[in-house]
Image (cartoon, rainbow, N blue to C red; front, side):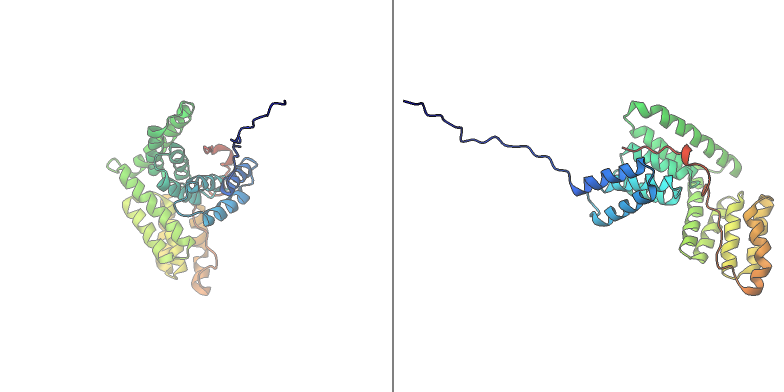
Length: 272
């Protein structure tokens, strides 16, 4: 008599791993950055951010990738904004603090850059990054020391951060076409310490656009008193008489630090 073969009633379960659409997008963006397709990476990041909810787990990663791609395009204000948003979601991420410190440095927020790199060092747990972070700290310390020395012995780090933020606020207002508000921001920057030509030059441009030509002339001449070789102020001062006759220029050129400079190879952003 043949023996019956007993089969187990329990079936072996298969473990199937799936990759979410968001993770696939993140992998695509990382590849685009590695391949130096930065414009495409920015577009994909912005598309993904529109799709994700404000509290989605991956949102901070997307913002960090956006900040990295923007920095490589030398869009440093946009990079700073992206890493600021990423830090709001993950305030204990050392990489994000390091990256925002770099973006701060290249938007001439030297005071904020120092605060950020110090926070990155405090939070860092990766021994391989200690040397890189320390090097960034030394560079930033030197920039801050030079900035404070230029402004006088009683000028504080907090005042430096405030002054630099006013300057960036002015640039942002100009970009939005808000010239009166921009002028007020540059004046606030100057009030904290009158030692740089750029706020005066940008203030002069804001006044020109508002057809306040006498005030613009004073501002542009003050920029040249501080730095006689300041090209932008010379250019706009030469255009002033023409503007008085026919109106303000259709396009204005402002001082945006480090824009179009050859810094691409010198910026190393940490990427996960």
